Amino acid sequence: MTKVYIGLGANLNEPIAQLERAIDALKSLSDSHFVGCSRFYGSRPMGPQDQPDYVNAVACIETSLTAETLLDALQKIELEQGRIRKNERWGPRTLDLDILLFGELQINTERLTVPHYGLCQREFVVYPLLEIAPHLELPSGDKLTDICKQVPLNGLTPIQ
Image (cartoon, rainbow, N blue to C red; front, side, top):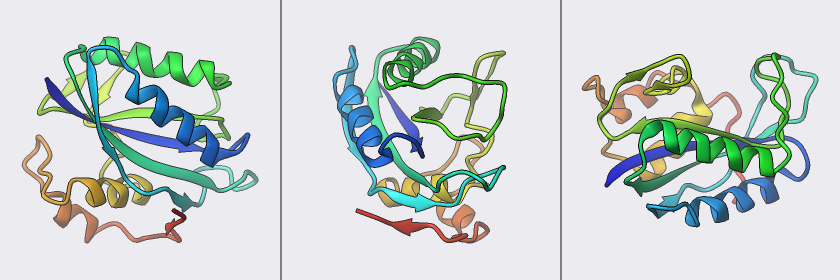
């Protein structure tokens, strides 16, 4: 089984309920075991500011699925919850599920980059991840506790 960290985010159609449904779906993933989830956090949107604030969290699962199979499963959950994929980056969305870390693997394919390319810069990833994995070391050898010292809170607020 591989330990996987997944970023969750939503800012449309009752974002807290979207994340709660996504967590339920993660608990039901085949060949996987749900380990836990951070609190929910309110965060400012990236990119265009003319959209609602986000609700974010980080979940942990253990899975025997491959990274690509897990990605397919996560995208299916997003679609089932009304996600419409657009070419617009950082726009509003009902649900976004990102594989942040997949064990110690470093993956760089057309469909998937792990560790997630924004993991070390985004407060809405770093702080929830720190909450559930305070001693985490990235595949690069960087400690999450050191990374968080470089990432300002930027208005990130626990909401649960």
